[in-house]
Length: 456
Ligand code: FCB
Image (tube, rainbow, N blue to C red):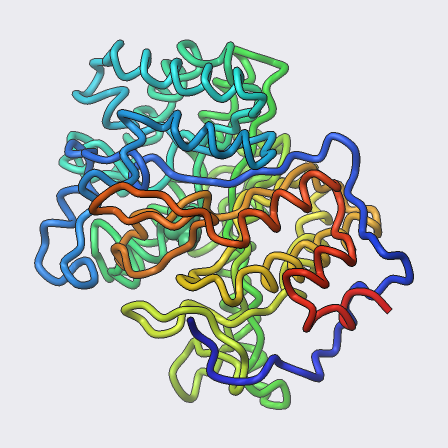
């Protein structure tokens, strides 16, 4: 339950509004959800996040990941639900600290469990997309300075090689690193994620190392399996000035946008790490043209105002549930369209690797899903090569510094009993997947209030 104001009106971008009664998606479009190992597996005791959770004040309400969604023992129960719901893909991550629990020592039992999970997905007709690094590092790596130590590039290359050698026959879609921009900013600048630092210099070092590690992993995967598709996942925020008439606000929004997005996008095309990233790599760097696709994670818009609180909500906007840091974000579906148009200029296919909102009582999620998907469909209709959509998330899971406060799942989880209860939106998503389209019936049933925005 959330929402402080009416839906925002007067946005300059028109919605998709079509005469037809359905907004179709391309054949063979991938439909699924995304998760991350530490957030769902449970008992990931050997990584830096587990250690971070023990720090007083680090996680809201002192929550712990604990058993999480118990996937290490029984992900298959949720895979069954996904299959019943018609999903044909799932994005998950592997946990580095399980596969390589000690530096240079790999655990065959962990690999075997991942093989079992990936096989289980295939058996259910669900194509896996696997992320190699999604925020959690082995403790041995953290003890050596983690992602701040340039040696991480070689460590990650070795981990990627081993993982792809062991799992590659079961995976055709790889993401190297999830959201280097968020990882660096939240862990090393804002201090909200492990390791909890507030040091701009370290933040940029870490981003630089993540990009180099991405490139190293990309080359390794392609050498092992030329047919694999390998991407990098970037979090895209619709940054806009709080007051568009203010030149200083507009400049600040541009600067934040550049630092958060372009410092990642540009080196992956031309190989050049720009200031304030460590300089040096250029045209022959392994970063040049190092993605087969882009993973775009889009959640929300942030207003930039250098005079007041730097990042804030649009006054009066409808917002999702609140956590430790206030409302998670405003509902701004046009932002995903803009994100897709922007990423399209980089010239590679795109997967929406995350999109969703925290909404415990599911009163906003149906509208969020439909309006965001309509904007995705609009981009596709205009020629953007979007290959799939992964909703965040399948099930409520351990939401990093927000603990269990924010509920992103299509399926509700009682983490103490492990009882699962699909939310209404799970059925809506199934209806969209089965039709491979947004139909006016689905809109009428689940979010009639946006009918006029979507169909004339
Ligand atoms: C993204 C993360 C994901 C989840 C969502 C809500 O930034 O990649 O793990 O926390 O936000």
